[in-house]
Image (cartoon, rainbow, N blue to C red; front, side, top):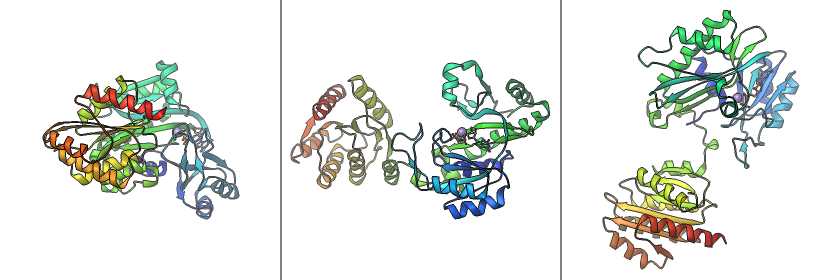
Length: 390
Ligand code: GDP
Ligand code: MN
């Protein structure tokens, strides 16, 4: 789960990270009021959307008076911001963050992510902050510094000094920098984050360290331990299909291909995506309906798949173990009755009650293409989708 920048900063503030004064606003009037309390010379008005690249896209505006803050707020609120991370449809700006401005001397990059290979959290830092870190990693990988943290020892002072020297921070900031790293590490451990990213982390003209941007994402599987984090969820920022899937306890991830996939079991779902790729098309989604799915769940899953306008053909690949193939068939038919099925559908059913499942589908009047094995099914669905597209 992702949160907004201002929420991330609030959280990091409680772990001792240096944050500038700021307030969230939903209207231009709120922005104006907040501005008067926050600063008196320089403000920054920032679009709050769950995507980066706002600066380059015009979503971060510097203001030199309360009136300019209000004008910036009016310019941003209820507009769609398109950044390189939002996709072409962009994201609506419902909230903005009004922050005290600062004079930047240097911009750095700092993040804390899990290094799975080393099985520990890892600090990633770079002198090339503010810009796209992916570009830095690609073009000048030497400028990316990584420091793994031993889970028994935590962040050691020597690691803080090593990074501070590598970034060229003034000596007098080194102690503060070490505390910041410790704060990041504590936040990650206590709150079960997937990633904390500060870009830019800046050195101001007065040689102070400040987290100027903050992005925190949380491990969904650990959210039950943090109801106060869960409460920060902004549904307006999430994909409607993924939200709907969550309501039905389905594991669904939207992708950008054309083959809608309904599968049971995460492993089989991954294999299905691979084989669709192997046959030259791309999956429109990852969807695991789970082991003991009910008819209602299958129906919901089917509707979610068909609500995606990119879907040119559907592949249903079920191995009935705990799951019964006849239940799947009934769910598909119930859903197809409600929404017109106007794309070809390939079904591969194996396992418990597969004969019955196939019979139910065959007698339903739906245009079903049956397949016996996974390879055959993938071949047929890719062929059907290219015919549908032609
Ligand atoms: P992002 O583009 O979505 O990652 O948004 P950021 O929060 O990183 O802001 C983008 C850029 O705006 C930063 O890299 C800074 O250069 C600039 N910026 C943000 N806050 C301030 C500020 O207080 N003063 C100045 N001078 N620039 C700022
Ligand atoms: Mn940023």
